[in-house]
Image (cartoon, rainbow, N blue to C red; front, side, top):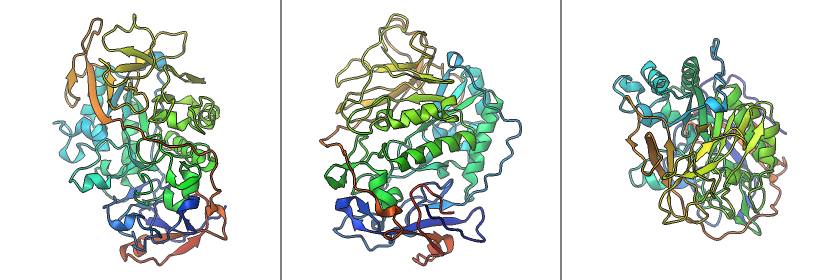
Length: 491
């Protein structure tokens, strides 16, 4: 493994990578030094993409357009933070009540939050918001994606933006648009302050994380980071047709969950958010994709095995969304138990009381009268203990909306619109929000073998670290040159 050292670099310094190597899409390699790439391990990100044509590779050969100034850059951060006597609340599963929230949506119109903090991480930590959550009686706040995500080009062309955030590009960086102060790297400090404030009130922080795909899409998508660094190692490609992506997420790509560098990246990210950012758990978006090493969803996959054995991750709350758009994705119940961890999915229809409902298959076909909800249980021998991050679960190729619910009574200021459920035995009200439609899946074959990536071979590929001065001048002059394997930091 190679690394580079840049003297006189401090917090706030922006940087990016240029990777020199083979352009052989048919063999899975898409190196192009004209693309300024984001460090996969960047702990803060500056900027946003602007959908410039230079970000894309849509010609037969590598596109010559320089993407500097049109993408995102990593930011060197200062990890120092005064956590004081911060301690994780560690509520047992049997006492856990989870409130799912969107960082922007929770406080965007809250009258008691200062206007400059509304819709920001600092707004979520405001005493009025924290007090409201405590009064609701919840014990944890599950935040919809806060990892750095991308504003899709197709939305920008229509004057729209990605509100929900299920389009991650930086698995270590808090989303920069959620920072009240836009100084480089400030989003990290603000996120830590938010966690500290919620912990002080006895509230756990759980993150909705999207490790199943990235914002680069398929071969027609932008080259922002992973694709230009080591495409054949990071992404699952079609077996025998490595110029195309094997997609079980409906987004254009899926991460290659059997590759050691991908597993290392995700595990490093999870540990970072627990040890450095002090979060208390994770809800895994489309967890079925994370369990696909080959064709089928494997509950004994390397990813779940690593989580179970990890001394840090196995001790926090873990919630899995038990489906994707690949074949054989849905499961009626999934359980995992290790130390303090243990989750299961119990599917019950809205129109039936939880006590009388039987566990059913976690699939909702088009035309079904009512979507299911999922409740978290401590183990198979226990009754459902709390509603944890329910999701409508569609069968592969189903066309339906993805709906989330919470049994918390939404009273007071700054909460989301509520509606009463229908049917007998449904006491109380549910907070309901339709997030995004599931996509119809298309044909595809699974990759059983892939070409070994040449990025780790110093004789064929090399990476260039470009600092902010070079970026500002939109030049390709490097300040340092280093050959590195995916997952190593360049700062």
